[in-house]
Image (cartoon, rainbow, N blue to C red; front, side, top):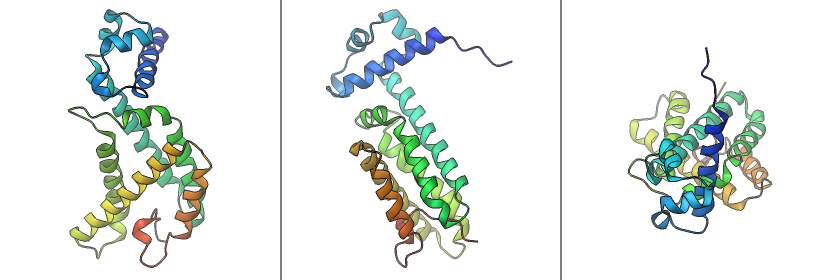
Length: 199
């Protein structure tokens, strides 16, 4: 039997996390105190510590959820592409999904804890995704070449994600989709695009 969700807990956590995101827009993580979060979220100290150990744990919880959000979006994006013509719609869905957490992602990109830093997390997730999905399609590539391709892919996709989120305009997704689709199999630029399975 599925565990019943306590809506009061969900509402409290959302309030605390929304307050944290709002504070990050005007203050650095280092200068934000738990008291600042309490004042913004209108919750007491006991309530905060019932859900989070401290501000670092709060950031870790939120970043881990964003990491999972990216991994799920990537999985869907890969599953959607069966042939090159599927690319634009799959990419559009991928970026629109990431836009759902735009404010939190942009705010938390400024935060580094002992366990997480979004830039490093995202690059790691993207590199692993490339190696898992596309390394088998390059059986002749040695480890050095695969590492280069995976890092290049991760760097480009991460910069595209950041550019899209910072623009704040979903229409930028059309630019990414158009450029990526036109360069899918262009000589010398395949590693810079969003690879598709070859059939």
